Length: 305
Image (cartoon, rainbow, N blue to C red; front, side):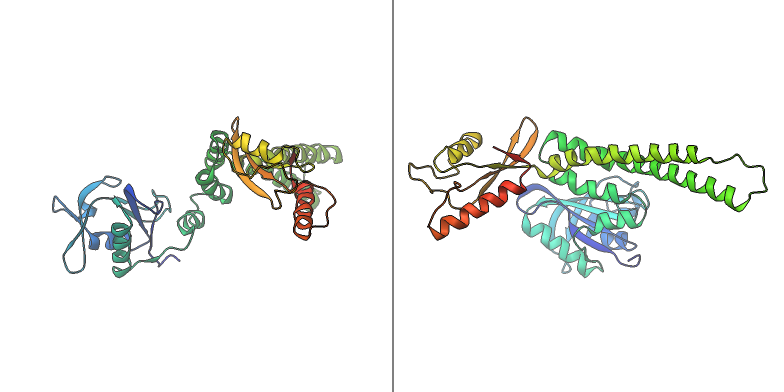
């Protein structure tokens, strides 16, 4: 991995004002210098580190590709803790794809999904909890979930885990010292002290587990099922909460035969709302399947209306 230089488009696909191509690895600067020509005539390495340089990207035949800004970030002060070059161009599909192809011609290879963050982890810049938090930040559905993910990305959870681990290591060290060197004048490690220390660690773990479900809800949404007999207003309630005609409503029983899922943000809490088929005894084969799905959703949901 250390010998590979990778590149990828790091902004969302589609049309926008700005798009970014990131190059990371030992040859990042060389690849960047091959593509980017500064308007000042200076090489990219001649600019101060972490400073945007204005210029253009040219094709292999010398034709202009796009007007861009480029920045060189020297290891280890970059996202991946490797040498990184980022090229900011216009955010259209064609300029981004063309510049990306030119990075491959210059010696980079396509980055795998999540490989920039993977390298940040393998290079020791972040730990696993912080790596997971990166995706949580991207996928956050509410301000509360964003704040939670940002705290984790800053190392709050990692710090709490390190504290618990240190307490356990201290217990092991003290026990091993007493067992291995009984003749030495070492402070006694009594059963009561060990039990007290372990109890403290257990309390810390229980505290983390107690709040884990809240974090899961903020990240993924509270699975909420609207369940009941036919024609009691389940689909009407879904439409009212969503403020749109998402589900078909009629006076005939059994209109809803499949599960309809939609997402809703309610007072900062993301809900995954599911409208279900009315639960009743029926001879209709398709409706039976819908009723069975309703019963299964009833068992799996965290909140039931």
